[in-house]
Image (tube, rainbow, N blue to C red; front, side, top):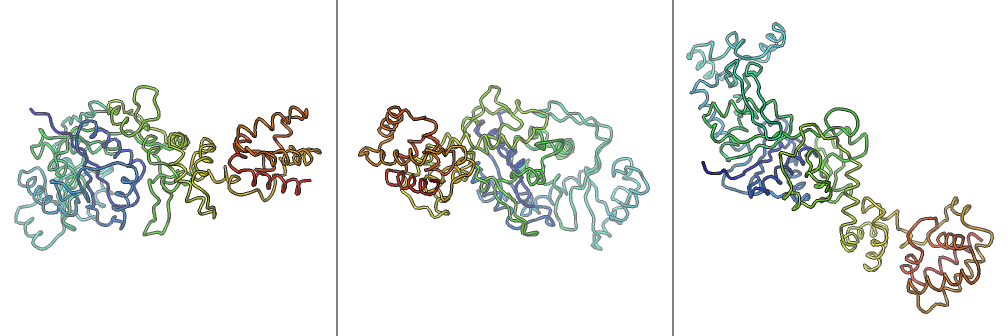
Length: 505
């Protein structure tokens, strides 16, 4: 048999913002497809019309655009296997529902919600299956005439999958190995509802995966319980030869304690769980996003890739291209992965260091503008080069290095108490005069002259430098002193020194 082309899909429901767990699932699908020269399909699963949220589909597409995950076909990308939106595929599902009914693999059921509730009261742990179906109102217990009459009357019904009991169903999973489930624990799942003429997830998924020639289904662990049902559906249609291979990914867990990562964890601990900021049209609630929180897309990708997979070496920093080369589904863990959001910040810091000073300066410019700073680009690039190693986010640069752009208005009391000595005003007056006399204000020349002056005078180096820093910065922080003066320039340096001497005396 010829080797199948790798075709994977990411199929979200447009019911709200895209959770970071969904992003990781899409990323693993993308890495797998790229590594095998395959295609990645973007399908929208919108058969549950009650849960549809306006704007969600556009939000999902925008998220992947920002992250750099590209689809080959699907909703808004085109392709030869469409339509890619399930709500536009009603007739296809109807046709395949009929195939199952005609083959006796499914049946029509008329039980009302009230009747089902009554059964649940009557039978502890009631399940609609081989042991109970013959006591219910369905096409297995009624004549064809009765069934046809009820349908003609417009009575609502569902189509249920007829599961044969006591059969071992084998699911081969790339990550988990052989999973065996006995069919008796499965219920006769609803596949189709006449009320809205739409299939349920189970039928739509199988039909779409088959018709779109999906070769591998890579999805979250929460779908593992439905895998045996999907295997049985493939068999019922006679599609065993085209059944995709399954890989169920480990869950993303809370950073602290047990359980699945939720939006509440993000709100509680102060980190985003969505790629972009989300404005809920129903509640008006705004949820933070990685983009708006100042994360670089490459850092988010790298961070997510390592939640539940490892490359088998100690490498942590990997570009998307490197991830494609190294990715291997067999190296995904079975156990859930704790969502270490502090590690996410660490990745962002590392990616800021990897970017050129020019790139970071361009990201910093809008923040400077917000604070009313108009300054030459070369100065911004120099400052970024000195300070980017001290931050995890570009937005933190302002607090870290605003003294390069704005003279201190006041002087930190603690630093003054500790660093401004009785003779500081006198020494700083001397130093200001010395600096003013320099024609060459380059970093190297300043340093040479000032160091010689301290030595010749027998002054205490620490006391001079600490007081000097306080006059320029307003507190005891910042890079090397002559890096600061070189950026500020002679005029600004002396102006700041004289003001500090005046204020601090």
